[in-house]
Length: 474
Image (cartoon, rainbow, N blue to C red; front, side, top):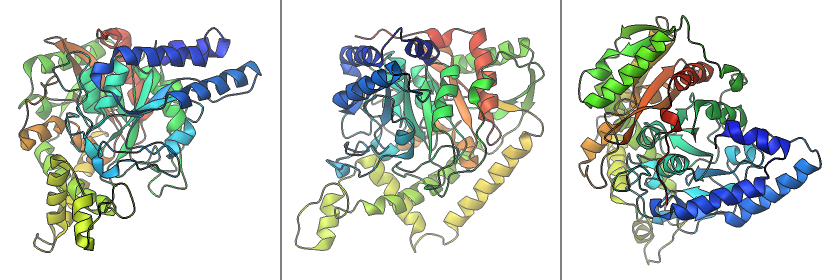
């Protein structure tokens, strides 16, 4: 069921939170081949569900999503629960406090911590120390990354909604590959306190759901200013459910022309354009716009991201967090404790070079200036259009092991990185299938205009039924 179907049943007493939680736990058992979880929190989930049921029977006023099960990406801190970031470096580490989003969802039964690419670095979920997640539509294929566990869990019906994090596209790309809805909110809209940082100036937590309407409910629960996060914005948060309406008359949708010119799978491009034409039939106005900086954005991201990761991950030194190896010399403790996987090592080496004395001293600053140019250019586009429309990914999910070349892998974020660099809200939604695999449509709006994405996205889902398709599980 969708959240839209679950919430009234819980509120009326037609369904108990415990019964609902047990159903999702049982479904995950049938989907064990997907390798969704790193840590399961079954007893905690059932205890929370029981507490919520008791409070509801007493007539206690409860938060919107109270009693609705959730699962979160394992780079989000939950007090006392292992936080691994899918890395051996953090084996057995248990954080002393909850992330802000966990506090916000304290009365939602937590089913567990979901698998991901190690330290959120990857586009396939193959870079996990706990093995790859598999796509529920085809077990031989990847679910996308780095929030692959979150997207696959929602697609397989093992949880009604999940949280992931998005740096270069780590919510939207797996949402596209798995046929679910994934939103990256505006930078600062959701507190990052308790999220293990990859690239601090880009990272953002966001929801993965079955429908756009469900996404609105989750945003209502997790958005808002957090004084404990210096990057958290104080912009007023609207009621996003007010935007669940089937209406796009007069809205200007900008089709990014460059997104359809090079490297795009033919069937994927056709599915995205078919969705655009359906929105036009519903009353929207389509117009072509140019965003010529995709290649520059990709290069900019792969300077800023690794540089910030090099700085952030320096804290995992075998002394303060996670695994500590014994050695006579301190330098050897560091070397033996920092047992990162190959993709993390690759990015840390690149980032350390960027920040090092041998690199051009202006390299990082040049990337910052490039990001500013890209952001200002995209901002100017919103004087011409209300939302931007483009594919989420160049094609459908690829097979496990099919893209061993890192540069080829990085191209999976080609269409998602520009909006990430600009700190803009963006959403991916199912818009078709090619060879039995889901295809994603991406919409981007101006900063803090998540509501507009909800409105256009919901209208699209009123015109289509791709989001209602379910893979066979178990």
